[in-house]
Each structure stands twice: as structure tokens, then as C-alpha cells.
Length: 368
Image 1 (cartoon, rainbow, N blue to C red):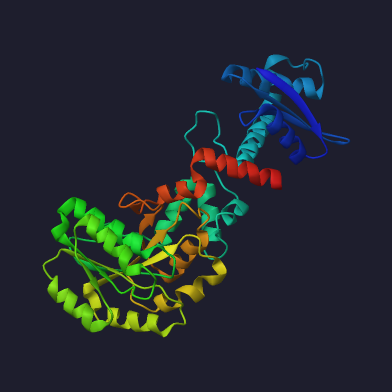
Image 2 (image 1 turned 60 degrees about the vertical axis):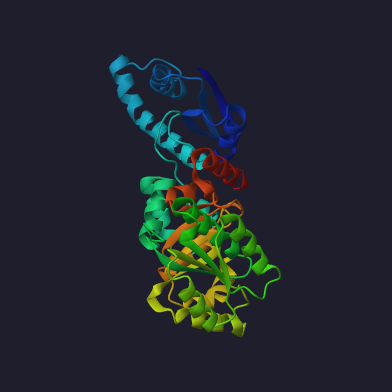
């Protein structure tokens, strides 16, 4: 076992010295207050027998620098409170560094309130997340809260359906439609799918979907109004799935409201998926998504997860609207980069798998 003594003006300063000198696997053996600050003894390359022996012997050296008069039994009795204190100190250090308790433990790391805020959570979910992560660990605790407050869809597309993908400009609607359509083509063949698009205002919008359709071997219908939609639905009524790529416009653009109205006229036969970029800022969420919030939505798709892992603001918006999450999209590859929701996979993407969490926590520690 390699053991060293560190001194500094406060505990945070000394913990930083330990972290820098001995690394993340260091274990605190003892601490004491000095006239000019704090002294902490830490060790690495230990085994359990050494650690137990040190926790018994070291307090006597620190306190009196001599053998206690009462013999071994008294020494062990005096050492017990010290061991409890050391265990508490060790847990504190591991919490600050975001690593697991013990090198081989499977217990999940914890996040403090600032760590949760760094993931984009700032309002309604923050107290629940903080409580749950303290009780269950970072990934498991956050997954419990998000499932309870947002929810998910077990079978978003069902056996058949008309699927419209809605969302703001630049969210990735055309690519998401292609991904979902391609998955069904791979499972059931090209005769099961048709693609519609109302995105006639964006340069090359129709051309982009036509390229995907040609690769998949499925038809494309261009919609310029409600009558085109009804005619296309009649024409392809034998298709198992119809995917509609919609235009993304400013929330103040009347053409957006018109499109939403004639899609809404389809009633329950239409499933409406709101595509949300993970990068949407808290300040702009309500304004950008206002036209869709009053629309009857089925579920959400979270896109660009790979570009904006700190997506807590979007998740809080979904919780406030009681809108479940169906899919995660994390790249441009068709059809690979869209996945049915798994909360722990999302939290991994947000940096909550153990190695990344340790790095995030360590960064927070040095910034403190």
C-alpha cells in the first residue's frame, strides 16, 4: 500500500491534491484539523486487509503517537468511531468525484444538484431528480423520474397507421421519416410503405424525400393542400404504413397553422409525432413549440441527441405537457440512427455511464 499525507488550507484544496497526485482510486484513511488548515492521509494500491489494519492503527498514531494503555481491545473500541468517520469521508470524496464506491462495486454513482443542472434541468423536475439520484444512483434514479413524469410508448407505430412527423425547422423531419420508413421496409417489404410530403417550401425538400423513396423502392406523394392528402390516402389505402413529412416554418407563419389544421381533420386515424431537437434552449421552447402544443399529439421523437447531450430543458417541457417520448435519433444514418426509447440509453448519451460521469463530476469539482 502506498500512503501519503497531504496538507492544505481547506478540505477541498487537499482533496484536489490527492486527486492530482494519487488519482481517482485513492482512499481516505484519516483526517485532522491543523492550526493552519487540514491534514488528510490517503492511500492507493491497497487490499482490504491493509485498509482494515490502517484504519485500526492509524488513529492511535495520530492522536497520541503511542500505544493505548488499555491494550488491543481498547484500541479497537477507540478505532470504531474513527472507522465510521473515515467511511463517511470516503463516501463524500467518491460522491464529489462521481465514481463508484470501491473499484469493483456495481453501485451507481450519485449526482449533486449542480450536476443535474449541468444536464439542462432547471425547474419542475429538479427536486425529484435530486432526491431520486441520491436514493437510487444517477442513471437509475433519473430513469425512474423521467419514466414517471414523461412516459414512453411500448409500440409507437403499431401494426399499421398514418404517421405524421411534425416539428420546427431544422429538427430533422425528412431524415426521421426516412429512418422510420426504412425500418418498416426492411421488415415488411417496400409494398408496405408510402411516403407523403407537404414540405414544398423548402429548397430541395421534395427532392430529398424522392431520393430516399427511390432507394427504398416506395412511392412519394406531394401534398399542397387537404384535397391532395385525401386523394393520396385513397390511392394508397392498401399500404400498411404511410409516413408524412411536414414542412417546418416559423411559429408565426400562417401556412404552418393551415397545415396543422388539415392534418388535424384526419382525427384519430393520424398519429402525430413531434420531433424535438435535443439542442432546443429553455428560453425558446415555448415560443418555438407553441403551435404544436395545442395540437393533439401522440408522442415525441428526440433528435440530435448526439449533438446536444444536455437536453434536460426539452425533457422538462415534455413532462410539463405530459407528452410521452417514443424514439431517440442520434445521427444521419438511415435507418440505423433511430431507436425506440430506452431511458438508460438516453442517460448514457447524456454522459451518465460511469466513466463519463466521473469525468463530468471531476470537471465540476475543479471548477468549484
